[in-house]
Length: 221
Ligand code: GAR
Image (cartoon, rainbow, N blue to C red; front, side):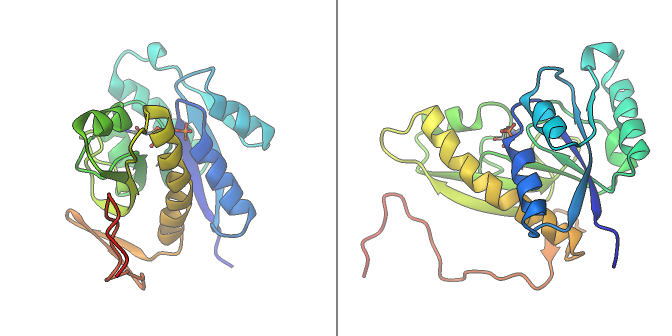
């Protein structure tokens, strides 16, 4: 039996995506183990979740490092010390540098609450609503030096409903994040993913050629 993929989960917030990964591993849907959880925020709820599950939880305060590069060097040291094979950003609200990316080439992934390249950066749900978009969604992508920019591995579309607030939309988007992120990481764990420039090739994937999400919904014919 090959060793399960060792994940290093980086987060700044409540860690519901971390929880989804923990649950997927527990359910046998994700062949991985969480080797370490790291946060730049000492009070992050995700650290508490990690501790409750007996996972190593490390605080690396960004204020303690003299530069972004110096911070990432400390991150790399911690991730290597825990034998991490894939770095998973799960609400890690910091730009990473080449120091991390060169230590883990095409081995850093992120989840973003929009259909990239639309609405990168902070407050993606708020900006999708303000723009009047009808459909938004979730993107899982490999990380490069630019914010929410690297090659896209998987996406799911989510309709924006009349009366949606940032909170209701965020809740619906998160439900899809919690499905998509473990699934996308399992594709990597199973060795089915190859990055070719901006394109990501997934072996033996299923594609729904005739599926479409319309908003408002199209009449059923
Ligand atoms: C998630 O919705 C994730 O998509 C977002 O932070 C949230 C973290 O939630 N990430 C970004 O906006 C990255 N640009 P969580 O702490 O409950 O997992």
